[in-house]
Amino acid sequence: MEDLDSTSDVALPKAKPAFVQDPHRVRELAERNLEVAIGRSVRAFRRQQGMTVADLAGVTGLSIGMLSKIENGITSPSLTTLQILSHAFSTPITSFFRGYEEKREVQHVKSGEHLEIERRGTRAGHQYHLLGHIGSNSSGVVVEPYLITLTTESDTFPTFQHEGIELLFMLEGEVKYRHGDQLFHLEPGDSLFFDADAQHGPEVLVKLPARYLSIISYPQA
Image 1 (cartoon, rainbow, N blue to C red):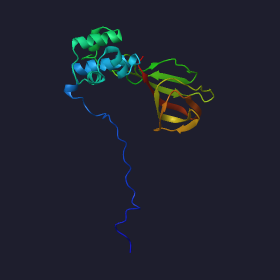
Image 2: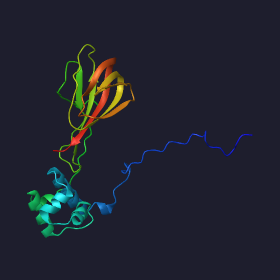
Image 3: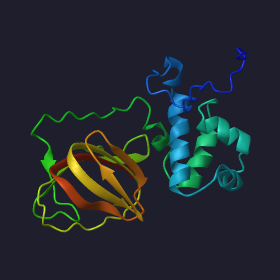
Image 4: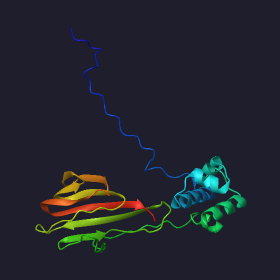
C-alpha cells in the first residue's frame, strides 16, 4: 500500500533570494533629516580618502562607536566634532551639509534624442547612444547607460576591459558575447551581468542588426 505520508518525491519550491534593499520602499520622513545627510557626507569623505572607521578614529580621537553613529545618522554631532572631522578630511565644515535637501537630478531622453558618441572601440557600423548621464551625486556611483547597435557583419570587434560592473540586455538580433574565457549566446530578452575588469565584448555576430542595452556602473572619483 502506498505510503500517503511520504514526501520524499515532492518537489519543494525553491527559496527566492533575499535582498536587503527593497526597491519599492519609500524613505521615512524621519530619515530625510540633517543627521543622515551629515552621516552620508562623513562616510563619503572617509571612503574617498581610503580610510576605515578605525583609521578615522585614530586620526580624530573619536571613538569607533561614535563615528559609526554619526555615519548612520543616529546621533547629531556637535560643532566641535564637525570641526575635528573637517580637519581630518581637510575640507570645510560646510561641506558636510551639501547633501541636505540638495536637488536630485533626473533626465528624460525622448526616442531619437539620445546622444551618439565616440567610444573606445567604436567602428564603422557600431552605434553607441548615451541615454543619460548624472555626474557627481550622493550615491557615490557613476552609471553610464548605452544603447548599442551593431550592423556590420564583416567588421572585427575588440575586447574591452575597464573598471566597474556591467549589465547587458539583448533587445534585437543575436550575438555570442565573450567574458574572460567564456562565450555566451545572447538572444532577445537575455541578460549578462558581469565584472567589467575581465576582457569582454561581442565576438560572433549571429543575427544582425543586433541591439542591446549596456549599463556600466563604477565608483565615483
